[in-house]
Length: 344
Image (cartoon, rainbow, N blue to C red; front, side, top):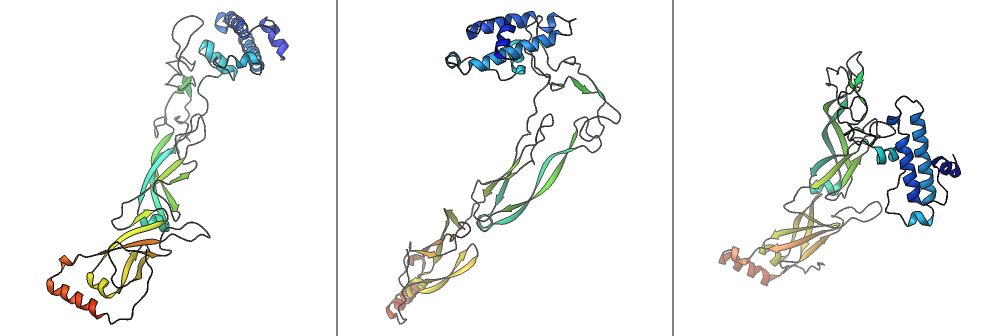
């Protein structure tokens, strides 16, 4: 059907304003509504042809200056939406196919597991298609019957007359039919509840709040729509010793006054075990020693971050006077060969 045919069908001039075309369409739609001609089998076809003509005219006007000046007015993208706008009915009873809901699972892991990567196994409770009825919800040999709430129309209309508006029937979800005899295993739901196990690979360097998506493992879609997704949100458990800052790992380590007076090698904890760190003589509290490569991986071909070790020297007041004398004597001796180390 051409645009010229559309204007002829509605009985308006191509130079008529969009508002005039709208008023003409309203009048014809009311006159040819199928409810007004219950015994005429051609009434639905005429009504639909009028709607299609109005839709084509409106699309052609959207490219003109007149349509740009009326952007605030409702736009219609399909015949079913035209029916919804004027009469509260749809070209097809029921709702469109829609994807299922996304599920969320919160998983807490340690800082070491997130930095170095790990494998995790989770169990998620979800719906499974009923094996007895194959997801239909029907009892063996059963079928469907007209919905008693909407009387098979798919909507619950309110008020008499031609302009009747009503929401989608919640009993039948717009289908107009309900199960006559439900499946005894799933009570007509079409699914049963259960748990499914998932094995997750958490890559090295995973940050707090990272999300792992499992496509198609969410809720079932409506009216055979695609299923949703399962999102696993990673949470890092608080660590009493290590703190992550970017790609570096920070920590504080207490050492004795004797160790810093004479200089010593100490074992410093890291996420991969212990590393030997040399403390020079007269090391003071607050000095930071860098352990290269003991931080967070940056990715393939890139060096990992470092571990920043802050030394905390025990206060001399924590020792007896005799111990302090020994430490002072050790510091005066300094018989060892001086050792040069770099620190931050």
